[in-house]
Length: 360
Image (cartoon, helix red, strand yellow):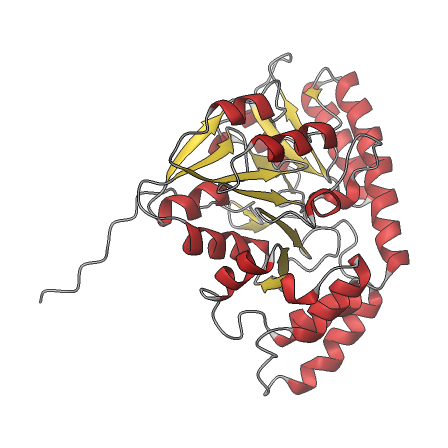
């Protein structure tokens, strides 16, 4: 029997951070940059409450969440689009704007989903070299051609944790042609408390050729519900709405997110915890001669070039203790692992077990 032929899509498959190793569930999962504390008790209460109304369709436009986001961040709700995670916003952008042979620029160590959706829509992905794991605006601009359509930039970046300061980020937007869409991914912005940093939304809320994306998966602890959002000019949002399916964000996600953004105390607790432990882990890794940078996110990228074991060995040994971290092979970063900052007891165990593995 002859079956329909699917179109060929030349792209790689996304490999998520592991939860299971050799058929055993991880005791400590630090492989996906998930929240240390998870959703706030207020969010859990709202989730349980809304579970009684699951027979109803959600609001297709998520109007009440968009209004709450607009009020919190002083934005125009008509310029907000919701997605099933910010990943879906990237999908909308690529569907709406990319044609065959268009070019998309990403840093060579950037979130892999950017290039997956770009290639799915027929575009060529162009890689701009980073400088010591820092995205370079100079190198990005050097890759611009007549075919360039989109520049994707996570700030702070995943998986490196580094960020571009506000001066260079503003300069990048200024030097890009007006018909190039700059996508600034603010997924980890809450964790950065540096004077030289500003979020994409703070810098570009009035820009016509920039879209800023944010997510509830990280600091708000709602990764399992899949809800994110984007903000841009009305013209760009109208284009994205043309490819957005109805009911793309489920009802529990909408309600949980609407409560999460109002719980400032829970947010502060998470931020303070991450920033404190990032400093501690950075110091401890350095003492073990594991190369790393402190970065500005809820994880650390660690490299094993200076020590006697490699990252593959370290990954397997940690897994034996029930600790799962993220391999960096898929990102092309050699001999390295990414470690999410977890709860205090989890972080202490990572440090203790690495010391044992390295015999230091």
